[in-house]
Image 1 (tube, rainbow, N blue to C red):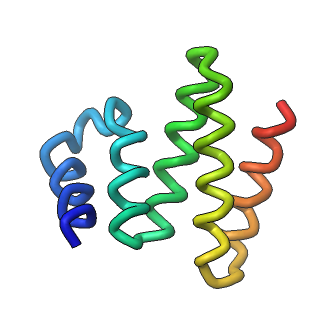
Image 2: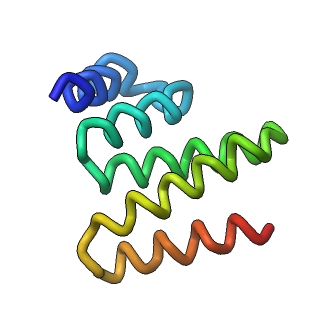
Length: 91
């Protein structure tokens, strides 16, 4: 519960600069059991990590996001997200 509230607070307080908090948001939403938001922010954090050459961090974020996606119903959005993560692992 506290992690869900922390994630929502970060989104509200830093609405104009969320990119500075993608990893934190992924972690809080993951622990707050919001799989969709956790996967979304993990994907954004992984892309940032790749851009900074932090390949191990990016791989860890991608693995986490893929595990989180398993909690979501099998929809087109989920499948697209899984494909995006799979492709980012190969690049």
